Image (cartoon, rainbow, N blue to C red; front, side, top):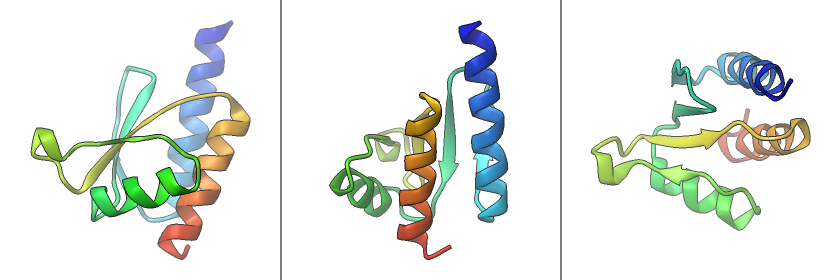
Length: 88
């Protein structure tokens, strides 16, 4: 089912974020809030690489980005780009 695919994708993303040493806010939804340090800088860098996330500064969470759990290839591309940006 689509729900199982999203849950599996989220678990995989959480595992990758943990391996990178990044904290995230657990969620029951199809997205995660990820503490990346400078959310605006990471948002801009990801956008330049073709990855669309949402900066959270307008919610007074400037160190976070919101990442939607997508298809496996999209999730893998996000993690690959984030690793490159963060030097992990």
